[in-house]
Amino acid sequence: MKISREIKLIADQYGIDINKVKGTGLEGKITSQDIENYTKENYLPKIKKESKIFGIRKIISERLSRSYREAVHVTLNMEVKMDRFTELQGELSKKQKKLSYTLLMLKPIARALNDFVDLNAALEENKIILYDNININLAIDSPIGLVTPVIRDVDKKSLQQLLVDYEELIEKSKSGQLKKINFIGGTFTITNLGMFGVDFFNPIINPPQIAILGVNKITEKPIVENKEIKIGQIMTLSLTFDHRAVDGALAAKFLDRLKFYLENPEAINSWS
Image (tube, rainbow, N blue to C red; front, side):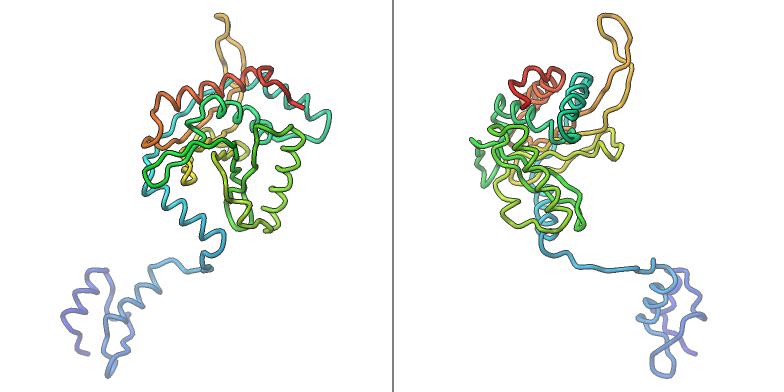
């Protein structure tokens, strides 16, 4: 069987034994499509399932792609001593159901955003927009992937009100009942990977917001206090910010203020 020079070159390039390829051309002639089909069948991974990206997942995909293309991402990592905060979590959980760290951190984060309003902002059409409301998006794992519904006016709500909002968003996320209204109006985002054992990571900004906070696992580490070595509960905070809108020094000051509130939860006026 006569084989064209072009087909021989393609087969040689892929290291294919031309005698193993079944020709589908005229009189059994091997075509370039036959080479392609042979390569797919023998060298490419078999597809188990294909699914289109649509709905909320498509919106998330488009927004994250836009974020990575446009924002100048910079991530700062800072260790925080969580001993007092873990004690607070235990004390508050005794009074009602067990409270998650993500929920409890809403108050310190809102307080730090009140102190550093430049982080509670968005960048749109070359304009930096500072928000009066503190509406925090929560990154939640759901059947369709990661979603980021919002809790509004976090700084104005009691812990009990935040718990109601938090549990409602978790339930709607798990059951696929979130609507578009649940995603609009956010001013800052937090994403917690601590429950998956993550030490630190680089979160991707949720556009048009200018910052996102990554929360990591709490682990026991030796620390030095008053020239003595002790074991402390340590967590790393990972803050990604858009350097077009915020300088590194300001972002570091915000992160340090949040660290203060987490290490000194009594500085928060009310945990009721």
